[in-house]
Length: 90
Image 1 (tube, one colour):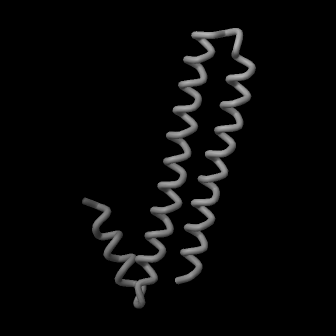
Image 2: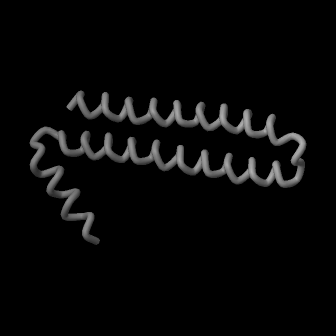
């Protein structure tokens, strides 16, 4: 329950809901990062399993996994940028 006093302090010092906007931006950036980590982890696990089942296709699997990981990272970066834009609006 240590998070509740921190949340109240962030809201109380804001005056015009600035604290809520900053917390929303922080949560948005965190969720984007966590989502990217989960997505890239699942790609890595599936890639390893696929290579173990079919070693002759390892090159194609690895290339596809790298492209997918880059796309997920791009979406996560977009989410973090949007969170910072929201933060600067307050």
